[in-house]
Image 1 (tube, rainbow, N blue to C red):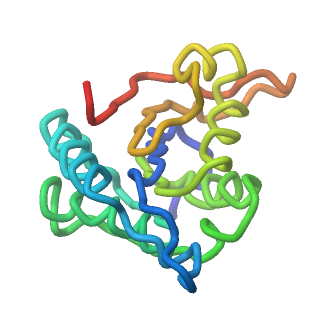
Image 2: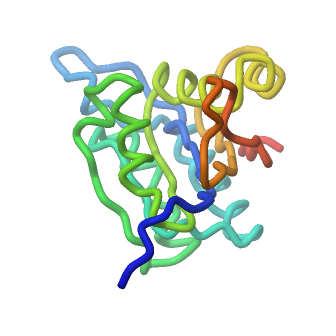
Length: 172
């Protein structure tokens, strides 16, 4: 019998790396990373591998720039990473991100690769406004990776529920 009790979750929040502007006639969805974005995505994946970061599952927006940000994790961290591409991470509000986290509470670790403002809203709600502003005074940067620990049981008083463990930025 599988234990259905909630357990602690290591959560990785990754905003896609820097992308170029849409070309004339190009959909926002199809915007690719620019040169800096490609370098940052590679550098961040290497930093993650060096620190032993290997999420049990990656949920990634289907947008091109998010897929291009997640792809270096396969080459650098592990080609056996379990990645799922989710349309709603591109088109949905921050509540979609929360719902996906809740649906994956049975895992030990989960990475979300997505977009602003949803990633930043998620961070604020999980760790609280003060901690989020202290971590990212100028907003959640492209290729920013936050590492959070979510407790097994969330507080009932509406307080922040997660602990911000660490931040990785490709230019560190």
